[in-house]
Image (cartoon, rainbow, N blue to C red; front, side, top):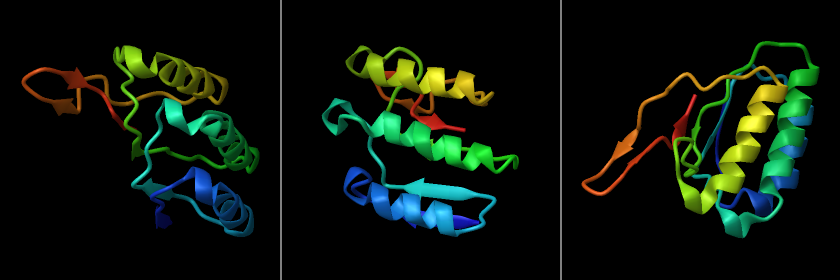
Length: 113
């Protein structure tokens, strides 16, 4: 099990790739990560990372507060759609279907399991 606090995932993606390649871990938790439209190709890099983990033929779980609304956030629809495609390709499913952040003006599903 590993828990990493990465405030700027894009700036540290190579470090993360080396860590995943060199480590035999069952659970990887990444904290303080934000995916939004300013991050460019981060979803593609995320898919490469998932592919690497999947290629080891072990069960794995992805968890995180990605700040990417998987319910209906139009501002990051492209990112949530791409994440959904990645989940489908690797046989992953979102275990939470209700909003995880509720305010007086919004209801979002940003905590992914």
